[in-house]
Length: 198
Image 1 (spheres, rainbow, N blue to C red):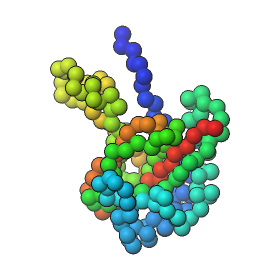
Image 2: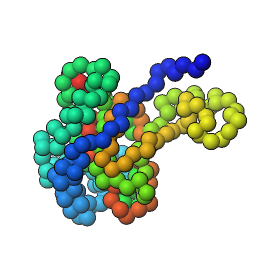
Image 3: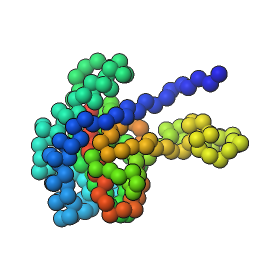
């Protein structure tokens, strides 16, 4: 019998207020993206539109409470007590050739990605990188198959979850992730935020 040790839990659910959040945010995102599609200024090699660290044309006080049902469900499923305190929130948007390098969101407890505008036919989901890759990949045994679904996840260098528009992923902030280069001029928009249970 195989027993998993030290798994990383990711919460995936629908944001019931997705259309309300779209109404609050998308007009601003579309207008600002057209003005300046690349706004990221950091030491990484990213081509991305982001509101990280910037003022936005909508109120986060109106947006963030709409995630409360997801916070409550996460706390219940993971047996966590305390009140959620959001440290930061921002919007990211991508079109053709735009991407986001490998990063984490430390020192927070949890991070979230809400797929506000997302078409699974042309967009790619967040890529999560195996935190044990330095040792697990270099010491991987030979497998009978090269198909990833037939190889135990501990040997995968990276992985994704299938998502749809309106989905939210919440994961530990230490979990490194990235966004692959997009291949469509259809706007891919996510809201991300970091939070702690206090």
